[in-house]
Length: 193
Length: 193
DNA sequence: CCAATTTTGAAACGAACATTTCAGAAAAAT
DNA sequence: ATTTTTCTGAAATGTTCGTTTCAAAATTGG
Image 1 (cartoon, rainbow over the protein chains, first blue to last red):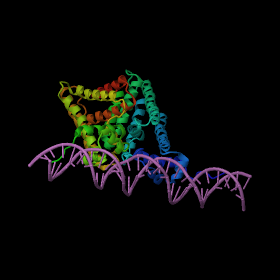
Image 2: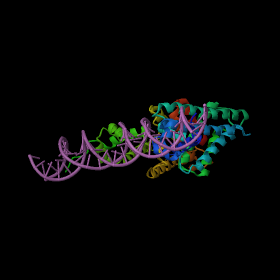
Image 3: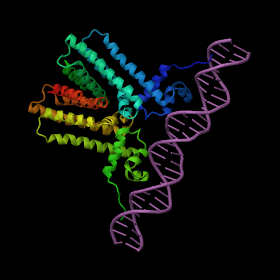
Image 4: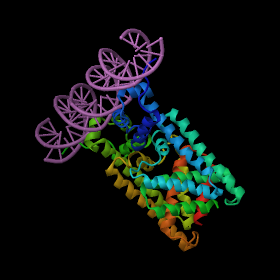
């Protein structure tokens, strides 16, 4: 048969992801992608379809990587409250390393495209619900091991945590002060303990 | 002398604001603005300068309107904690009325343009600090009247409140469920009480 | 009513946009 | 080595972008 792709697919999607993450969908031009992915225009269109198709692939990769975070924490020998704290500490680390102030790609997508693109809305919604679900699982665990209070149902607490979690990421755009950010985390944990 | 502007300045900036708010800066075309403002292209350029100039005017108007919210609450006969609760309830109302899912224009600006446009960054930063300051004032008041705990300094609590406040606005993009949103507010207030 | 000045409308600007085209280079299978 | 298929590179597609131009219409003050 014939020739096959010379590039690593996940790798070049990763490069596209970085550009979309930093500049947003509308702020990213095809030329930006050509430069970043180090592929020819036609190769990109051939392999990935349209700019929007590529954006969705980039989002998928980002979500997949973010989801792994919860998986990693699941295995650690910690109680529910500590595990939720770890999620926030990972986020703190992301903020610390985010010298470009790119923020969270999924939040960026929500604010830029959520109300403009119906196709993306389904993706964003399922992702949001998934985050709530993952937090809820940790809350249930915490209520079982006694590290999280049981006078409020897990879903409600998970809503609160998810909300503060998103706020935390926005806050990270404006301050990188570790002490201030850790103070926020402590208050969140205090609320659910 | 000569002819004068036939349109109301704040009014047409308001119309531009709606478009930018909904579609973002990069997602808004000059044609969108011509249509929405009901002004000719050249009139817009004559009166407001560039697209970016107009965007900044729209942002200014939005910030000014948002700031009035704090002013209104200042006059009410409530304690510090209740006043902070009122801010969140106003936000809840905004979310409820936001059928288009436009969210908060300033957060949208932060996520879309904060890391791309140095000029806007100063504006965004001063605005963010101002929100923290306004919350801090309410915290101080709450600590004086006993409605807010005094074992943590006002600045630290204000950081927590601001962070959750922004998260609340993001959450509003994903759910309009009043009970769920009120539950989040209750947890925030519980944390600082 | 006239002169001064600005707004207005429509057309035009070059640049940048996303996407397509297509001939030739490259690699796999026979 | 030849055939087959795909990838690749560069150029070109038509569209839309933000902005400018300019003559005509409009409105003010004298």
